[in-house]
Length: 171
Image (cartoon, rainbow, N blue to C red):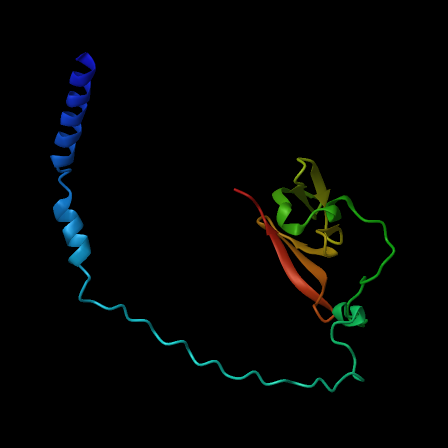
């Protein structure tokens, strides 16, 4: 008898659960009918032009990707001095010019020196004719606010060109 009551109770719970609604019937109806009258439009596949073959007929010419063509040979510059000098490098030549800072000047008996601070914190004194920067920069003039240099740089074609540069005092 207890067993029969359990079975009837189970059937009653199942039948009540089947009769209940989850409240989503209107949402299901909307999604079913919302786009029923629309048909998707698909753009046609674009027309592909036929590939035209090209026969390379310059095998006998110089290879543009050869190592010799990638690194141009430097041309000598008769007006550019010191492009390949064997002098001993000065301490300020081991740093790029933009890393050096002018911190002051010294004067003694009409001779000017500039005080330059290197990136490692060391302080150096230089005069007109000294070198600084990694492009063979020669100091040409010293003022209270700037140091003027002439650098010797190599162009992309391999020729050497003199370029004016300067380092200003930091404030």
